[in-house]
Length: 114
Image 1 (cartoon, rainbow, N blue to C red):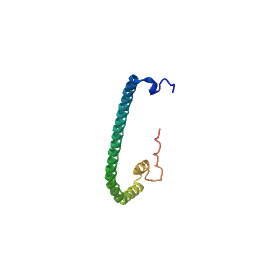
Image 2 (cartoon, rainbow, N blue to C red):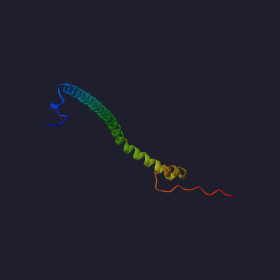
Image 3 (tube, helix red, strand yellow):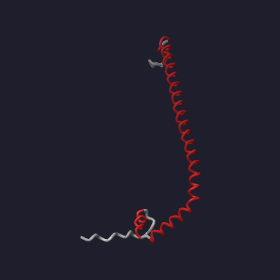
Image 4 (cartoon, one colour):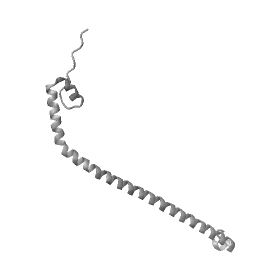
């Protein structure tokens, strides 16, 4: 009880100052809580908006994926026709090799005579 900072030993004049300090700290705490609440709400709103945008994008791409899956057999048939064309036209074989549509190496042109 001989502590010089105990409220009983400080007297009534300093207890008013302590009460002011407590009120000031309480208002600072409340402002900090409001600021953190606003920051949390802003972040949550941003994340919600991002999720909504991604869902829209996924929905849009689902149609594109369905269309690509329908077109895959047609593309495979067309690539088969291009490969057949490359077999009958040797000059086109270089293009097939460039785009890796054939396992055959490109025929290198004959060296020029000097």
